[in-house]
Length: 280
Image 1 (tube, rainbow, N blue to C red):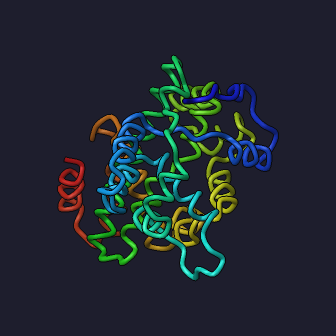
Image 2: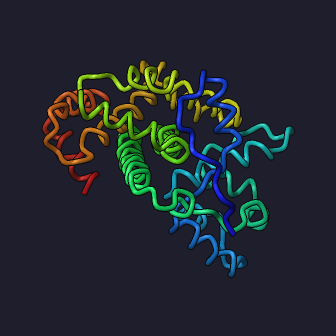
């Protein structure tokens, strides 16, 4: 059963503290396919292991975030390691405790009802996040980064604050999208400060800290440390996913290819071929 969602936020909250408190208390629905698969697994729990379950959870940024936040909250104080990936979180939690903690899930479609604009907006962010995560993982593997799976998770969660906005403040999210479309030269951060009184990056960092997510995951997702290869790995993957969301003819693509080529220590032509192969 799904309870009625709280009324959406129609006007910007006053500051970062208010936004953080609101989202910490807000419900987090998941994709319909995720909810359906979890119920199928629940019916045959003995046949489920962490790797099988991780395939479903990892495909859904919302469920991934929900799991990571839960595990961080129940992790033993005596534990010296943070589970930095979905699979590690499931291994630490256990299959039976997972199903006890996560009953039948409210879906995004149920939560947003007939708000087609919000469903389309959220769907676009989710698709972009999964593409960005695929690019990020491929870059990390090429770089032989031993934290490749964490980089994948960081890229997938890079825009989770925007997802939360479409879920809980869809009118404001739509205004942001319209402003960007009206004037593509406007920086996203400037639009966010004007319409939300905050920047989404700051909200994300505040929420990740409040949920006690693994420090490495938080650091890799902090664009203020773009001088590090792991953060550049995520930022360039996310940027490429954004610029190619509607095709490979974006004017900014040449800059993306140049910067990714530098990250991967490749020529620009081989880099472009690699990017097209990854996306295919």
